[in-house]
Image (cartoon, rainbow, N blue to C red; front, top):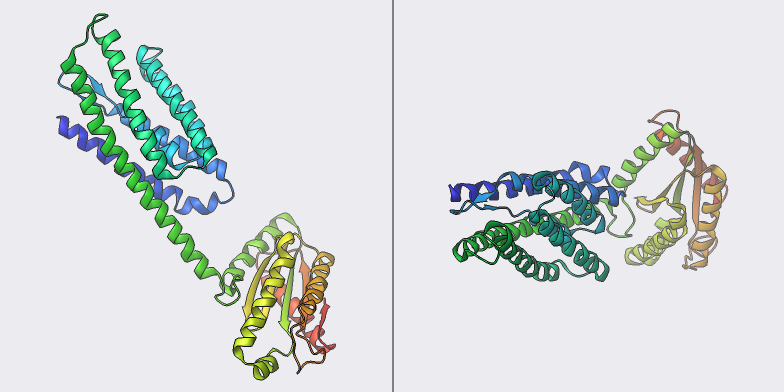
Length: 371
C-alpha cells in the first residue's frame, strides 16, 4: 500500500508538471506575451492546485500518520518564479491549509514554513540568485524546518506532553524525506528541461524571423505582423503607415565595389533604420535584396513622412561612398502610405499605395520621400 501511494504521488507530480508546461509554454504563451504578472499569477494558482492534490493523496505510515509533501509547490515557486507567484501561492495555501486542517497546531506550523519560504524567496528574487543556488539553500532549510515541525507535533499533539515516541517520529521524518527529496528533484528536472526547451524554441523562432545578414526581421515575420496590425487597425479605426525603402543604384554599387562591400552597406543602412524607428515602435524588415520596409502601427501619414525624411538624411550622414550615383553617396528612395483599414485584408491596398509612392520617388530623381 505504501509503495502504491508513493507511485501515485510521483505519477501526479510528473503529470502535473508536463501538463502545466504544455499549457504555460504552449498555446497560452503567445496569449500571455507582455502579461508577465498574469502569467505568474496563473502559475501560482496551478501550483496551489498541485498542493491540494498532494494533500488529498497522503502517504500513511505504519503508525497511522499522514505524510504530505505540500511544501513542494511553494519551493518550486521560490526557485523558478517571481514574487507574484510566491504571494499567490502563499495566500492560496493559507486558505487551503485552513480548509483542510482548521486553525490547528499543524496549521500554525505549515503557516510558519510558508512564511519563511516567502521571505527567503523575496530575498532571492531581489538578489537575483541562480536557480541552483536557490535549490541548494532552500532544500536543506525546508527539510530541517519540516522535521523540527514533526518533532514539535509529536511532542505536543500525538503524545502526552513531554513524551516522544522515537520510532514513530523517525519513521515519519524518514518517509517525508524519502518522498520530498526525490519529488523535488523530479520537479526540478522537469521544470529545468521545460525552461531549456522554451529557450531553444525562442532561439529557433528568432532564427526563423530574423534576416541573417542585417539582423532585421525578415519578410516572413513582417507579413505576419502586417496581418496583425491590419486587424487591429480595422477593429480600432486607428491608422497605420507603411514605408517602402529602396537603396538607390545598389546594383551599380555591387558591380563597382563587390558583394562583400555591398553586404557591409546593407548592414549600416539596417542599423540606421532600426535606430531611427525604435522610438516609434515600428517593425523594420528586410523586404528583399536592397529593399526594406517599415510598418508603423498607430502612425498617420504626417508622422510616417517625418520618419522617412529623417531616415533619408541620416543615411546620407553615413557618407557611404558611391561613385556611380549622382550624389556620390549611398542614398535612399522612400515611398510612404497610410490608411485606416476598412477590412482585415487591406494589406495589398497599403502595399500598392506605398509601392506607387516609391516609384514616384525614383521617377523624380531618387534620394527623397514621396507619398
